[in-house]
Length: 392
Image (cartoon, rainbow, N blue to C red):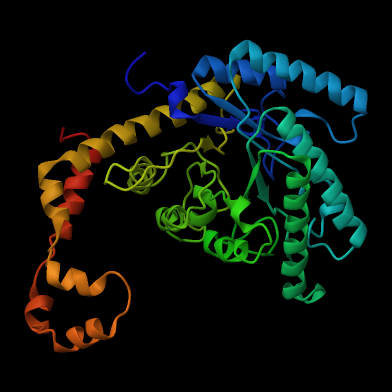
């Protein structure tokens, strides 16, 4: 074991659907055997993971009887106790069953929306029973192909009503649970409602119980649309709404690849870890680091555990690199910028008539300022040298 191997305090987690993925894709069937949920937990424990997350159907097959459900859950709980893993997050599959082909909370058929609420209440009960404190909503079918099928304003209204109902349900049951909304710009529908983290953050402010709802951004989802994932996460953190996060790898413009964390765009992965760990001086993120990724289709079951260990080790290596980078005296100097207390006082603390007048009188040599080099090229090169391990 070395400094980069995972430890419980790292708060690394995986979903049953991630390491349990049998390698199926749209063009080919499974290449690995379906793994038993309890064996997945034992495998994650051997790899050094801290938590395991699940959709309702990852554990209890759709349509199971109450007796079968209780048997499966009891066995799973015994395995959690045996290994020491916890369930920090749970969610509901509202996208695979054919009944949700037109969405769940936004579907035009009221019976579909009613069934979605019932299924989610049952899944919330399951998550809480297993100890989950965070509940994620990914609206996998909340969107359209034929956009004339409904007014998108009506869809948002239905989505809001569903979340208000479920928040009230959680409060009525006395559960200690927060919700996290997960955005995705496209796939599997042509056009998805609330496609980015920014959309979700605004939507949350319209909810009746907005304080108990945050976001669960995913690397692949923002990156596939060409957006900066680090900026989206920073916006969520600044708003106090980063309740959970999904880490993986993704190439811009491709389908949702869910690659091993850090295996694509290592620079952005570094900047993300640096942000989450607060090595630049801002407050660190204290929640789970969840890997929503899949092993390559080329792998057998042993390769799946290589994949899981790789996700966690890469994160820890990047964290160590970020600490070195932000402690580098040259980086401190390059990032220091300029400080003029009198001007800083005018810019902070909100508007005042005296401040406005002082700003109008402020002398500003625009040509001299425009001509000044900012040395960001040097800063970026130093960052790359830290990232490549040639600077200690």
